[in-house]
Image (cartoon, rainbow, N blue to C red; front, side, top):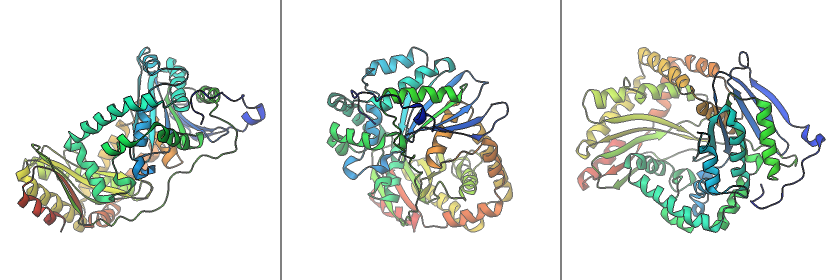
Length: 459
């Protein structure tokens, strides 16, 4: 990918343009829900989902880079770069970028995760060409000027401070460190004050050029759109920037591999003068490609996925020990996490931990009842559909699926897969995951005697 100010290359010949490959991945009824994919010369992938019944469209570009791709000294560079791509290109200033989308009532944003980054805009269907042009310009034409790096550094340091002021958020970063230690998955996505202060414009530019070429990108668009028009508009935008050339390069493959986590019994306490103690009790989970993830989804829902879940009922409804208590899973390419979060008064920490540990141990040994599994299965199927009721969620689904799995699954297929989960599969994954010795992260104003007892919860 060229930096801002470079000259665009000549348009490729008709022969080069003819090698674009288009596939229908999911065939909807009457065009509705149809997912198509085109791979352009140079390795850029474009996936779309057509929904003629709506009047909006969401356009996004996913980059195959996250915080786990950073060295220790580059920690925070991916997120820093996310900010900088909004600061201006050869064609647009930062104000031009934001005002173009604001002027049509659209929404534009971005997010950075441990394994990917996404930039997107949601607009009326008639304004989709504008959204495509703006977002593609940001991704291909960022200058990453020294003065922008210096200005945005202050904003990012404030974002780090804001996160640290929210212990209910910060405890999840602490839990990642507890589980992964000092490796990329254990470091915060935002970076630290020290690493952010040490990043320079030159280092960020090199990071940008390495990770933002077309082979690392997936374009995703959902809504009242026409696939062929989106392809033409994206292609024109990338060619205008000189960022799309027929080099014969193939798209980068989804991440793969297996990482074994051996963190049993680790405890990390961060002392803070807070009104509540915030805790995460958990253990290694499943990689996102693990076939057992469907059963894990049902198990997680039954344990802490709603008001009828075991943890909610035992901790909040029956005893009133916490306002917020839930379980969650995080799946990465090669490993995963399962965690239980609760926020409670510091004096109640050990009671809450005992209840959570007892429930996890009981389910690991005895499993869930058939009624609990049936209820969780229905809840998970319903929430899956309801979570895909807008074009932004659909864009996220198809973009992430292409980047992380290299394939698409229809909503009907997902629902069928959830419905096919058997009680025996749920009980088996409960034994495998919950039967492990947990680790623990706590943020709060615990006294020395209380802190000393934390190891009891993971013994």
